Length: 71
Image 1: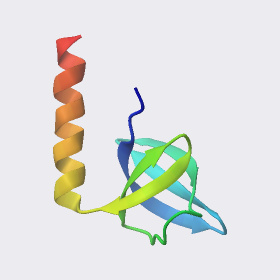
Image 2: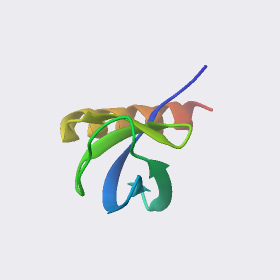
Image 3: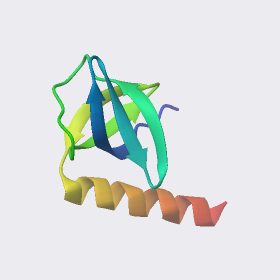
Image 4: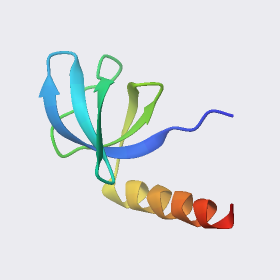
């Protein structure tokens, strides 16, 4: 199963972005969608796939935390 994880764009550097995932900052490619700092995004395999609303990001983050507690 493939899962895209929500994060927030912090900075842009050419074709990449620094994305914050609850305190873990990683570099992700931006070539598939236009993003700007502050955008909530879904990332999979090091690529930003989609810009989402902050509400959607918060809901997905809460869901992942619930799932983590079950295991």
